[in-house]
Every structure is written in C-alpha cells, then in structure tokens.
Length: 194
Image (tube, rainbow, N blue to C red; front, side, top):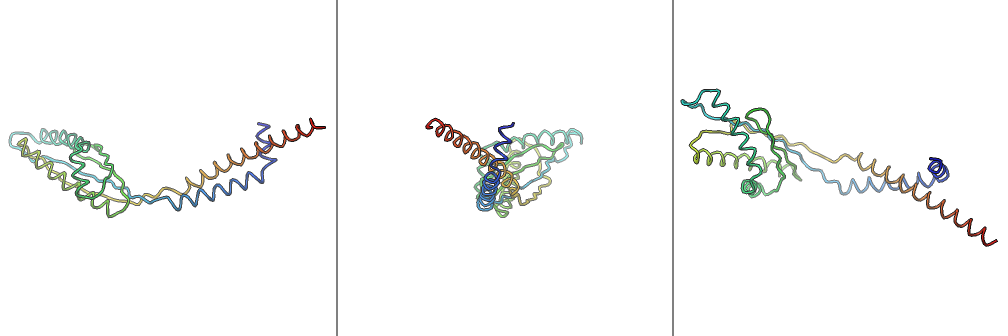
C-alpha cells in the first residue's frame, strides 16, 4: 500500500495526464464506433377456436400448450430462414413464454426500418406456420394478437468514460512504477560506478 501511495503521489501529474488522454481517446473511440441499435419487443397471443367437443377450460389449456409449441418454433432454422428471407435481415430472435397463451420475442437490428420489416415478416410467417399446422393436425389455433414496439438502444457513453478512467489510471500507475524502478536502478548503477 505504501508503494502504491508513493507512486501515486510522486507521479500524480503523469498519472493524471495519462488518465485524461486515455479517457479522451476512449470517448472518441466510443463516439466514432458506437453504432446505435434498435431493440424490438414483440408480444403475441395465441388462441384456439371454441370446439363443440372441448370445454372452454380444455380449449384454453390446448391454446396454452400450443403457445409452448410455437415458442419452440423460434429454434427452427427453416422458420427463421423464412423470416430472414422476407425481412432481408438476420436478427437473433429470442422467444419466451409470458403467462399462459402469450409469447414475448425480442431482437435487435441496425435500423428501425429493419426492425419493422422483421416484425412484419415474423407475423406473416407465424400465420402461415399456424395455418399449415392446423391443416396437418385438424386443429383450429390462431394468432389472436401481435404487436411490436421498437426503441433506440444506444450503448451508454458512460461505459467508455469509465473504461478510459480505469484504463488511464492503470497505464499511469504502470508508467509511474516503471519510471521509479528505472530511476532506482540508475541510482544503483551510478553508485556502483563510484
């Protein structure tokens, strides 16, 4: 601890200068390369048409189980490929169940327009897949609602500032430590020469 304090107090000007320079470079890097992305949350509800054979409770339970099946479709490469082809984007879709017959799908895109196209493609592909599933299994499931909200998702500049401050202090301390070590070795060398 004494060594740390000695270097910090003895080389504080160099440490401050290197910290300021590193922080400025980190912020400049962040402003230049930090691309804003757009985060989208899509919320969908699945249902089943009331059947004469099934009670309302059984119909709701069937729709609930169907929502679990649809959640699994978001791991299906063929369905994901259809969404990518129709939207012209390759988003990383993450689906999770949200209470009973509801699913939440999240993804990020580079532009707001791309997010809108992915949402439209996803809705259409889901409708097509459900129709196909109903034909194959003689069932009557439906996509009862689909909504998506897109928000700008910039990386906070504060992260670059903190990284610059921490990195700059580390570089400044390493410089101070190395400078003290070299100075000490030069003194010892000069002392041996005498």
